[in-house]
Image (cartoon, rainbow, N blue to C red):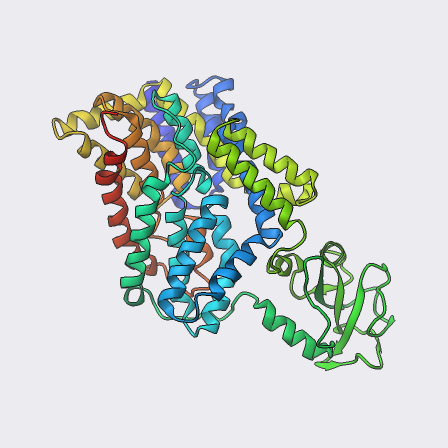
Amino acid sequence: MDPIVTTLVILSVAVVAFVSNRIPLGAVAIGVSLALYLTGILDLQQALAGFGDPTVLFIASLFVVSEALESTGIVAWAGQEVISRAGVRRVPLLLTIGILVAVVTAVISVNGSVAALLPLVVVVAARAKVAPSQMLIPLAFSAHAGSMLALTGTPVNIIVSDLSADSGGRQFGFFEFALAGLPLLVGTLAIILLFGSRLLPHRTAASAPIDVEQLAATLRADYEVASDRAMMTAGRGIAEVVVPPRSSLIGLHVFAGMCTPSGDLMILGVNRAGEPLAERGAVLRAGDALLLDGSWDDLHKHTSGSGEVLVVDDPATLRRAVPLGAGAKRAAVILFVMIVLLATGIVPAAVAGMLAAVVLVLTKVVSVTRAYRSISWTTVILVAGMIPMATAFQTTGAATAIADALSSLLGDAGPYAALAVIVLITLVLGQLISNTATVLIVAPVAVALADATHQSVLPFLMGLTVAGAAAFLTPVATPANLMVMEPGAYRFGDYARLGLPLMALYFLVAVFYVPLVWPFAG
């Protein structure tokens, strides 16, 4: 079979597998690499090159940096500081949340920023008496716009920047994406503020994220804890646990103020059937609840999977809600140094990212275990597995063949029409499969089409990047969209109502504004 046909068949099968959502994304990506090798399209070195690609290593390192900012409470601190000044009116709140999530996204990625700020936004919505459904899709969509503010905003930016340098262009600067990102952010916020109230539903989910202030007040009352005792600080926290059947703790006499058998934690109170037993203590029975105090690390160690107790609220989750926790200053300094290295280009991006990740572990801001757990291996494997497809598109001539066909079809329509075709393909495909996979598939065609039309590759790749960020029509388009679905009580069609005008904005920016900043003849 012709290598071009074989490559296109493998791509088609991969797209169907992505869209079906029945096969894990990582498995599909690895399958693509193996298929390209087994059919002889690529040799073994080429088929597995993605797993050692600097882009992949850089993306993995950014997950560790993101974990550090979240777990040390830097994101929680920023969120509380900014939102506390916005009041309770809908427009200032939406504007503040949109700008905040965009800035955070530029540093730690779309999914990381939405995951970190989502609980805070739900709590703020409840206090402001605004339906969460009015604020959570705007949170996710503003994050997509924020991904265009800096190189670190999304893996797509990193992929496109490196591809541009390899395709006769140049790498995009760290903040160069903001030349397109700022108009997108302004336009996104304007559409949300003007039309969001009418286009978004007014619903409240049955369950909501934890409001740590309210939780602390409830636990004080339930366990009769003194009002002057700090419940959650940078170094120490609390955990409510329940004694399960067959626990070795059953029969132990406990009282408020005593240490647990390990000696690491202190019991603040005991509750049985809703009644506090703090004064007289109790002989533990199955079903009794205890309020424990200790360092965050000790709480996690003794409540996570021990079998002796069942934890009600995971201490690791509560810890992230404490502003400026342990290690926050170190994390902030390391982040600043990484951004300086990336912005100045003193070292390659992958080196800057890995240096930051290693120093965060060495300075004990992030443990080795948490560093490994923080990495989204699905994203890493997806990018690593799909990079060989981009290589196959180039080496077999598939990208050139598609570009020639499009060029012939367009005739003398000009570079704007060629860019519009690339953008439309990306917009449609990006609603069905991962935007990262979409960009890896379409990017070689964009490069070949730029070459076929004798234009600079820069506007084509930046336009592709803008279109790749416009994943608005479905909850499955990005993990961030899916994250807000349940807490916002959204239905599948809710996304498209606000998403369609935003897609129109992104199309206009990608096709007509981008070439003004990155000219076709550049």
